[in-house]
Amino acid sequence: MEPSSGHQTVYGLVAYIDGALGEFLYALRQELVPTCRLRSHVSLLPPRRLAGDEQGAKEWIGDLSKHQAPFSVGLGELRVFPVTNVIYVELVKGHEELAEMHDALNGGALAYAEPFPYHPHITLGQELTVEQFDAALALCQKRWAEYGGARSFAVETITFVRNTGDCGWSDLQDVVLERQPVSALY
Image 1: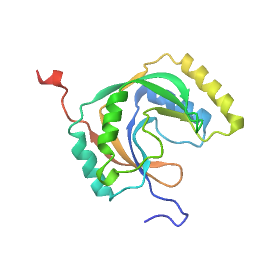
Image 2: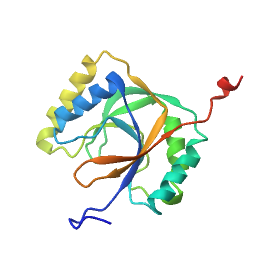
Image 3: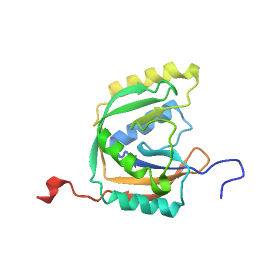
């Protein structure tokens, strides 16, 4: 059931970024948009309405995750999406694995015609006003240049999430990526 405020329930699939890198990215996003309480993540499936029900989506994710080995994601430079002025960190490793997972998971109860082509990234700032944008970009560039920690993370678990209607998300299901890499079989 949807709240009477007109909120439409949407879902997504993410890989959270833990450790020092996740904490750094979260703190930077908070600096840019203090009202954003989103845990640092990369989206495998951007927000969408379901084509089926929650249980069907959970089963779809669980079935497909059995065929995906854990993998590493490496972060690159800061970029800006030209149409939306979203400030993000580009990915220099793991892009292909994320794209393959996106394509496989965007079906069944999770099928959705997305408004933009899938482009895996880590969002730092979005919905910034014209007046806020230049200062926000400069701050991101400064903080990213100063950051001396690891710029990679492992994707071993993915999380099915639902929007709570108050700019927040609730975790519905964690799914461990199960397939063993070929090198582990020998």
